[in-house]
Length: 449
Ligand SMILES: *Cc1c(COP(=O)(O)O)cnc(C)c1O
Image 1 (cartoon, rainbow, N blue to C red):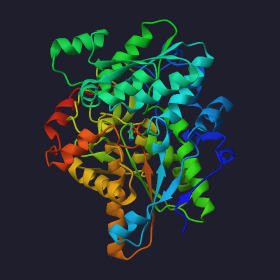
Image 2 (tube, helix red, strand yellow):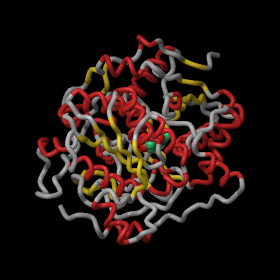
Image 3 (tube, rainbow, N blue to C red):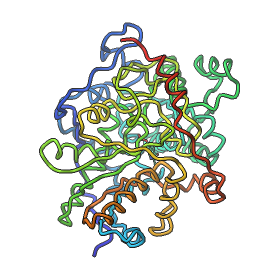
Image 4 (cartoon, protein in one colour):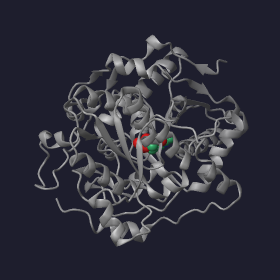
C-alpha cells in the first residue's frame, strides 16, 4: 500500500519523446501569414533559436536532454506519482486513482519543464532577453524562474484580467527579476490598437501573444518563448509521461485512462504522448483532454488553419480552433482560455487517439474542493478540470463495479488562486452558457487557405 511512487534523480529520463515520426497522420506545416505558403524554417529565426526550430520539425524519436537542463530539473524532478487513497475512499470507488504531482516545481506547475529548456537553448545561441505572454501568470512566472536560474532578462505580457486578479503571480515574476506588463499594453502596436478599439479590453492569451512576438521581432538579441501549443513545448513536457511510465512499471500497474486539463495542450501532451505511443503500438489506454465548457476547443471547435494570435501576426497552425477572434469569457481557469490547440494533439484527436470532454467551472471547482479536503493539496483551477474528469470516471467505475486505474496530471497548485476559491465558497461563482453566438461569429473570420 505505498502512497508515493518515487524515482531517484538518476532515474530521470535522459531524453524527451518526439511523437512526430510515430503519428499515423503527419501534422500539417504552419503557414506563413504573409505568403500564405508553408513556412520556411528560416522565417522563424527572428524569434526562435535554431535548436528549437529543429526540434519543432524533428523526425528524431528521442531527443537528448542537455545535462545543464537535467541539473536544473533535479531541483524538483523526478516528481512524485501519488495514489489518492483518500479521494478513492470518499468516492467509494473500486478505481485506483493516481496523480502525477507537477505542482512541486518552484513555480508551482509543469511549465518550468519547457521554460528551463527554452531558456537554455536561447542562452546557448547568445540571446539575452526573452519575451512572452501569460494568462493566469503561471507561464510568466515559470519563464521568470528560468531567466533567474540561467541568467536571461525576461519581459512578460500578462492578460489584463489576470494581472488585476492575481497580484501575487506578478510579485513572483518581479522577485525572480523579470518585467511584467498588463496586456493590452501601450508598449506595442498590437496593444495600442486593441486599446484604441476598446480601452476596457480584458485581454486574452491570443492578444498577449501578439504583443510578445512583436516585442521580440523588433528588438535585438531578443527572442520569444511560447509556453504551450507548439511541438517543441510538448516535446519538453514529455518528461512527465516518461517518468510516470517508469513509476507505473515499478508498481506493476498501467493506467486505463489519463486526464489532463487542456489549454494549449502542453501538460496533456506531456503526460499523454508517451502513452499515446503505446496506444499506437496496440496498448489499450485512453487519454482525455478536459476543457472548460466556455472555451471548448477540442469538443466544439473546427479543425482547420487559423492564426495562433488575435492580431494575425503569427503563422497559421492546422488545429482545432474556435476562431482567433474568439474572446473567451473571463473564467477562473485563465490558463485554459485559448481559442486554439496544439497541432499535434489536434491531429491525434482527429485520428481518434485522443478523447475530450468539457465542464462548467462550478462543477470543476467542486471536484477541486473535494480533492483539497481529501488529499490536502489545493489544485489550480486548470488542474480542477482533470480532477473532475477523473472523479466522474471513478464514479462510473463504481456504478459498473469495475476496477480501473486512473491517472490525473496534477498540473499545478492553486495557492495564488484563492480569490477564485473564495468566489466558489461564497456561491458567487457563475457558469457561462456555451458561447455559441460568439463562436459562430468568430468562425466567420477564419482565414481562407
Ligand atoms: C498553463 C496551465 C495549464 C494549461 O496549459 P497547457 O499548455 O494546456 O498545459 C494547465 N494547468 C496549469 C497548472 C497551468 O499552469
